[in-house]
Length: 635
Image 1: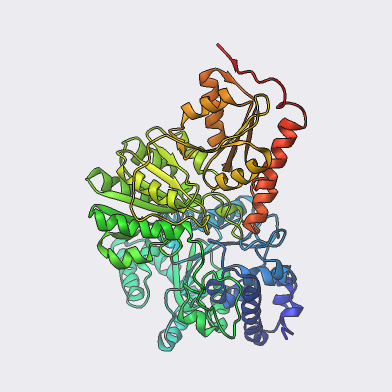
Image 2: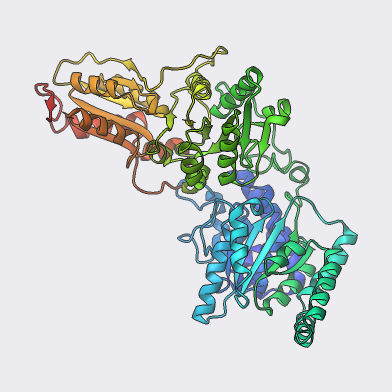
């Protein structure tokens, strides 16, 4: 089994194969991807669709000398397998294992780290320009999907690249929305070879030289050429950017891919190859439902993914989706916006019930936020459902287009905190820090499912931009109450009070998901626990009260410590002139790798055991707490 694939430990071994061996290799590689992902979980449909393209790229180009940048990066499993990581695939996306995305520190073949979309053309152009300046004749290759081409950044890069006449840049559009029918595929195979061939390039350049003496004739010739190509291929747009457009070609046909890439290798200047592939190629179940098989957990390939049993606990995403539908039922001004994350953000039912008020703007986070601002400016109630990590991409719009104008946009921020297998690129570690410094913002963090629902309702009632950030996955098991009531703004609540005497009293100020482990830790320590609820405006009065009645303060958040919610508490104490020993717990000042979320939180000291350990080491072991209580005030 996998007899050919076992011989490929690097692309050099691949390039030693006879061309006739490549299709059997592709069959083995596809089977290996399916077998591997079914055992570990991970991205499947997109990887099954890039098998032949990956083989062709490593076969034709001298990687890693030639640089391949994979946009988004979740389609790189075939690439990883062919570049020496075949025997590590069983560790995919696991703690201590290989990443599900390209990582520069994992392999020299991962020339640029990716996971967020639409960055590949910019990076590949930078590499191509560096190659030109170094004079080392290396190609910069960007592989970008049709979805990622909806983002403005991709077109910004193409606009820049189009004026670089002699940079060795190739942009490959992996168009996997549909497959090419056989007649069109055969025709386009011939056309792609023609357009990428030396004869076509030489003839085109020669005609331009001849006709340059008669500009009107040259202009006419160019228009005729554009018209002739435009009848068969959608070349006009990309050629207007200064690229030589080639394709579309069948991305599963090695006999089309390889000669086309070999021809392109001889060309100079920006080249654009349009490749059409099919998500889930070669696995019928994934072909039929590529969304279901986009990122499955473990499953039996012979049986496929079985319907999940109804979980005992709702996910926060489900809570949001249900609330949004309820809110839209009550108020016709409620609008739902997602940047290409309908399923992930829980908006499937909303789209079905309120199609006129549902907007999937594509992978365009900047536009999503400003679009919401425009809606709010004219009386609508927009709700932007967005992952924490992707809101980072629209930070200027959050400030300039929403907060500065104090527009009532609701941000439902999913995947806040650690996200597990997707790792550092998708972690929502920074939202509390980057939002709490923005004027006019209200920021909330729920401790359970029902509080999340009530916070979302509260956000919708506010006259200013308001964010509710919640984690991936299931909640604590608390039932949601159908009736909704607005929470008092900027007010937390004490969930547990210590029975310790003065001198031994510890107060834990917990935010969002950290309330539950803080309560568990407090049972061991006999500490007070406050569910702070609001990061901005902070319940400064509660912070002061707890500082005055306790001997030490601990803040706990599932976000970066630097500039986060704990920092807000320290600032409140300084403002009040109160000096108390403070321990800030949160995500450390480093990028947290992929792995099981519970294990990652434990490694960061953010489970109950870790919280107890940190408090004992900081306050109890060295006698900071345990003596006579006294509140120090600074004038």
